[in-house]
Amino acid sequence: MKDPLLEEIDRGREGLNQGFSLGLPKLEDLTDGLTKSTDTLLFAGTGVGKSSAMLYAYVYKPIMEHLDDGKLEITLFALEMAKTFVEAKLMSIYIKEHFNYTLTAKVILGRKKGYRMTDEEYNYVLQTLPWIQKVRRIFHIVERRVSSDGAYRIILETLENNGTFTDLEHHTGYVPNNPDKVLLTITDHMGLLKTEGGRNKKGEIDRYSSMQVSIRNRTGMSFLNLMQVNRAGSSMDRKRLGFNEPMIDDIKESGGPSEDSEIILALYNPQSDHLSTYREYDAKKLGSHCRSWICLKNRYGESNAADVCYFDGATGIFKELPSPEEINDYDNIFSDNINHSDNHESDNQEENHTDLTFIL
Image (cartoon, rainbow, N blue to C red; front, top):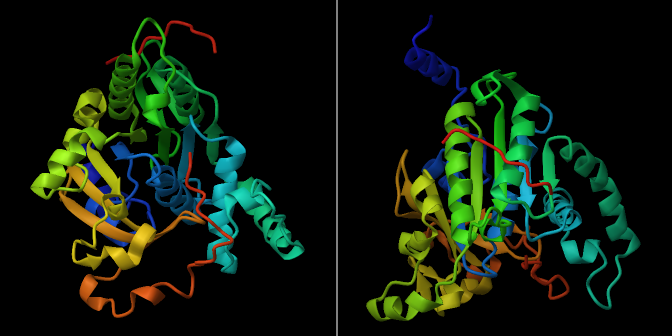
């Protein structure tokens, strides 16, 4: 029998342990990209764009790279967005990146008051629809609220469709059909899990987090959990001390997720704190377009580092900024591919109870 360490080393020599692209090279350097058997937590305040960040970096970009090679399958528990809206947001990104045209999800779905799509815009939608239909084969959206037990049923079904448990009673000894395939489960967001069994919200979240650790360790499945935080209570004290960025302390009360996650990312909008400069960037000129991915915890690499990006709220696209000293004209950053039109405002918004046993 081959030594398991040597087997992993040999896979690395073949390039099989490298993470999938997130479309943001600096963020990939910090996190290794989308990899197997990894628990990631992404948190932000309301309206910062965490769902857009998740869809762009952890859904759209990996899917563009692995749509047809059988190496990726994603399940999204969309607890605050309808399936049609999620797909419309993906369509908006695709149209921008392939046709260089800004068409928001709200316009695509006819929700923008006083505006109807033109024939040209509708043609972009029709050209994109075959791609969306292919995406559905590897991207499964669950739009109903679920508890930790309800999520477990769906996760277990995904695992059984992609491999075999040698011990069916305890769901251990998992053998994947394709060892190179990344199975990713995303929850947006954890605070909207349905509570069951007399548990309060924190108890339900902690149970779900512990369940994910067990599944990750037994099967190699990866998890991305989104969490919404309210920083208002601590922000005044921080501002007096000169600290504005999110900190792990913002989610300490979450308990399980902050302890169980191997990587913790915070998405930050400097404009929310009325900063004139941020990490040497002119935050005033970047305005509402500035977003920072801050790596606060990383069991496998660098932490307390940031990837500062330009965020196009109309389409949900993120683009890494050059270093501050390389920017000569803030008014024309990405002017070739980012639409600043006022006609395309930001889209930023947002079962049975059978007893289940999983091994913790």
